[in-house]
Length: 561
Image 1 (cartoon, rainbow, N blue to C red):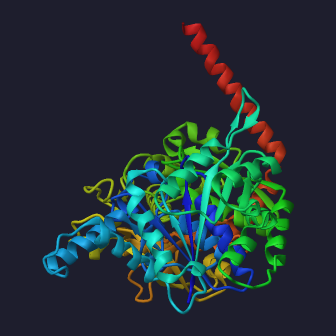
Image 2 (tube, rainbow, N blue to C red):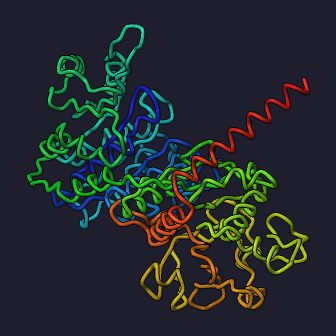
Image 3 (cartoon, helix red, strand yellow):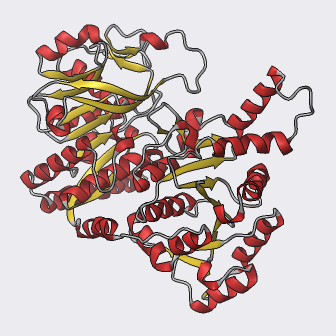
């Protein structure tokens, strides 16, 4: 029978439950166990697909087309397993299933209640990923203990232990030990209150993972142990680390995986060598390279979480420390574009929806094309590269996407035929993994080293193939298409070091020890570009010029006043 680990959180959100769960998953895999993971989210949206990126961060897409929580990206990157839509369940989707069952008459006229109907549905969501193919299922419960929305989930996981047996369930509670500046002390009281709240719901944690800025003393661990009724060795300290990929090793040193295995009656030796090698590569990645990420949601970095991690993975591959320059797309429009981008070694134009900031993204694509700056366009990024080329090389001045200008005379990007009759927004885009056939000898084909590749998608608009011949006659190569040749999936310039776009989201398949080919090639090209332009000296000159312009601007303003 598969074993279960349930990860809950208390005191505050954003403590790193997802990273803790992911790190534990990796540690268990390094013991030779088959691991899968799941996120239970308390919000009432059916899935995060229609949620504002500023509120929720990125939407992570699975191979089977699930629009899921960004924590699934952490899960996949750490345990190196492709998950499915079944690995994410929300209150909205659970109630949707319960109400559909009620309408079908499945409950035979009984009053539908949170207990047992909602809790039974939650348990069904856990059960459907509990298969004979896995040894351990790790389930993260979103939200914070004490939130009213989380109560059905806590009741469900409480019941679960009674149903499958004590030795088959381990409860891990992630909490905060804050440092109070004026007193100069770390305080355990928030952790005590959090555990008390969890125990009031019938769950006694087996392990407490304490997040803190600085390491906890043995005395503080003993205090938490005594007040929360867990053995002192089961109080695990997750102090802040330099990079997230250190966390599995830190938690192992604290004994997390050992304690979990003892609780679950698992006896397996651990082999840390592969992950230690990865962390060594991360620490050795010191060559500077500066990549501009031109987006409309850059104020919340989690909106582009997988893109940022993919860039870092590519940096590890090349021994480079990637500095991501977060650039609001509206700020690179017009005359300011050159000043803003002059110090960049490479550019990424990520995905998104809506017209805000589009002209800035088009300008970034133009700058990269004209200055031979390596550039990678993702989903919408590929579309704006197409628009830019149409306007400034092919002479189609008003070329656009019909998403932004339905009346354009040159709809080089247009709504997909399959999307024309779609009315509902949630889960109706072209979602999930699709195959593409790559043009032999193209940059894309050489990067992948494969003639056919599979990438995940999330879009409604696509390259208008009616313009394909005009583009390719001008050196714009459609270097990857769907197997039936109807859809353009990859584009590139034949006479540019690296100006490549894809309609897909390759960032979802990158791994820390196996950088995605497109990001790997982008960083390689960016390092070469940096060397050609003089590297640090060019950065310093550009930064100095920018400061001079800022001083002059302020001086003019002062004079005007």
